[in-house]
Amino acid sequence: MSDPVSSIRNLGPATDALFARAGVTTAGELRDLGADAGYARLLASGARPHFIGYYALVMGLQGRPWNDCRGKEKDALRARFDAICATARAKPESETAALGRIEAVLNEIGVIKRA
Image 1 (cartoon, rainbow, N blue to C red):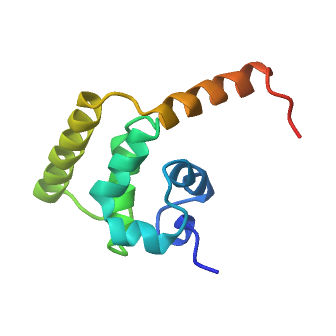
Image 2 (spheres, rainbow, N blue to C red):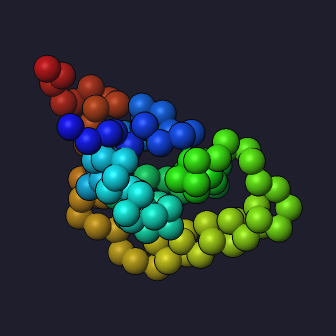
């Protein structure tokens, strides 16, 4: 069995579900994609952009604590994050992302019967 996404430093159990919805189910797959492509997949699957989440992902893939970089390195990460978000906004929402958002709302209001 392959390690889950949450086995990467700084990433918790909630990231397993987020990345699974984006089609990434193992830490190895995420490492192969890299932080930028992996985060772009999250956004394409309907996840909301969040700089700290991106930042923690980048640091985790480097084996570093989430708050390990500062100054110019952090500024460069912010520029990369902004570029990923701008690209995601320019693309139409995928059918998978739209269905995921609809399912989340239906679950929230109790329309879908829980098993």
